[in-house]
Length: 184
Image 1 (cartoon, rainbow, N blue to C red):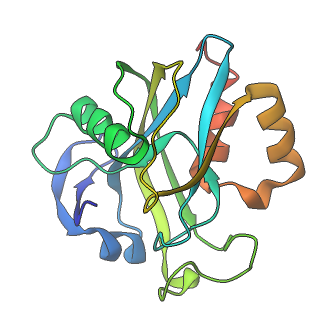
Image 2 (cartoon, rainbow, N blue to C red; image 1 turned 180 degrees about the vertical axis):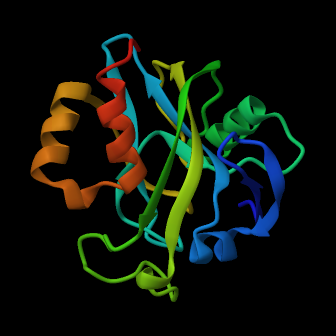
Image 3 (cartoon, rainbow, N blue to C red; image 1 turned 90 degrees about the vertical axis):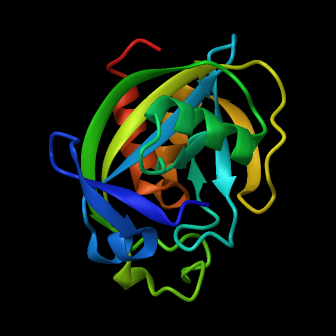
């Protein structure tokens, strides 16, 4: 797990580094990435975050998401974390990026923070780079990172997000809305 994040400006230019938890507590803009893998059936691989995550544990998210380490190649960092979290090696292509900011008030099914950090003290403010990849195998997730996974068709996923929004992370819901406007 990365201990420091790269602070950026609105142009995604690096302006410093910060401890990851402090950056989230103070909602400082920092670089992140989100990986979405699709199979030949057009399904996307989603993961249920481990409950031990310091925020939003137990919620569903995209295949892999994290923060690149300072002074490293962004795409290679996304591939590295995909291998560490899901046990998958595959090619990735950056599809788009966006900035979002949110206070993390969605605590998951049990309504409790997933760690000792109070949810009202944690937020997201990320310049998120979204990567797409193709994969048709079976993942081998790290149980410390991932509580579950499934392949799901986008229309079914969008319907479930509409019905059960509280089961999904904030960035994931934003990206899913953006995907409908883009070719996968």
